[in-house]
Length: 235
Ligand SMILES: *Cc1c(COP(=O)(O)O)cnc(C)c1O
Image (cartoon, rainbow, N blue to C red):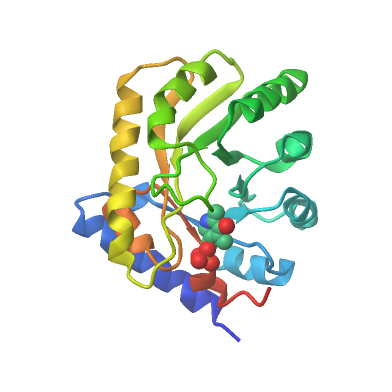
């Protein structure tokens, strides 16, 4: 059994120390509890320990948990992050629960989100996923594709781009992720300078259990942490 409350405090304090080391305000960093494969009972424990941002990969699993947890009427109500890749045919379901979509990685998806949002008469906060490391196994735009993509997306009025997301290569050495995180921050600065309508670079979603302190040192505002809170995933 992992001790979820103790893990929550440890992650929060290590993230806060990393922020201070980098001269950043610890309050500018939000821990997203990545709850894929975890039970509602485990999710309730992280919420009781003070985390109200939850991240899920799969639309169906997320939607089920969102419904179950909403019925429990937690206070504060959680904010739901969709962090896994999104199929175009799941957009309508995703828009039901996701407060922020981290995985905008192609124009066909942007168009589907625009259509879905127009029907609901709302906007869609999202992050553009960038494959900084260039690994073929990873989703996301290549760094050189980012600016042309943002110019295209800026023409879709419902899309509210709030920043960038990346996944670093999985390695045992968190320092190996540093250049990836730094590059994402530089890309965000370049993108912000374009001043495109509907495109803001408020958020950098980067860093997972093995490397979140490095990500915070490099400017992460949203860290996505699963294993360090809940223990190893069994599936
Ligand atoms: C699973 C997952 C995480 C969390 O990974 P941990 O190593 O368990 O912290 C973060 N981001 C994405 C996109 C994930 O799929």
